Length: 203
Image 1 (cartoon, one colour):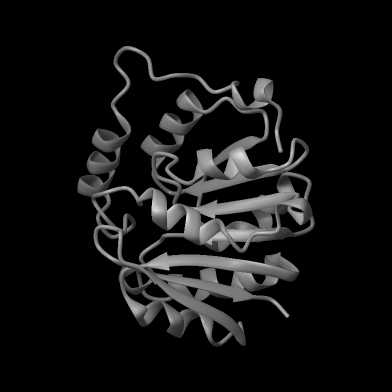
Image 2: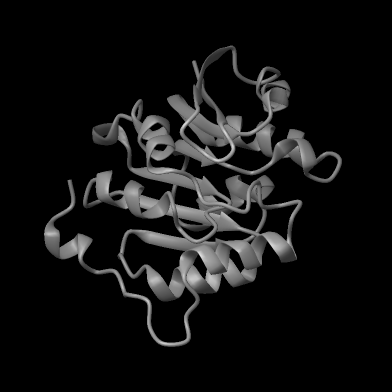
């Protein structure tokens, strides 16, 4: 677990910086196809989604569509001091917000597409990711983007790692099954709206 000094290296929200909820809502209005909900994920969803992660074996964690960092902070709290979290988002407003509000040295915010995850991971000096988390709304992404992201994610994850996906539609499983044969599923009802949770393991 990171030391209290490392965990404390997070900049607080300053004057003129929108609140997380306001920022999330603005992002939804500007990019509704890329943001799955107008409300950030609940604490219960976050805990359940991250519960299967073996943090002792995690050196690189990747998140797609981090938004205002709802998952970023809990991930950083659980990660080892020498691990890295790469957050990838196509929305430059979210990337600027994360760069301003999270100054943990283990955190890297990247403006780009999740379909380019392999290149992004390599450019940051890694061969693979241990875990990848996504809340992207696969069923509403432009044609071809969802399958490209699923395929690239399978390639970038190490054997024994997992693709963690939370969605509000079970259709996301159609994007996972062509690449992952071992998929765990659960629901989190204490979320608005209730969420489908998937853990797709790379054998």
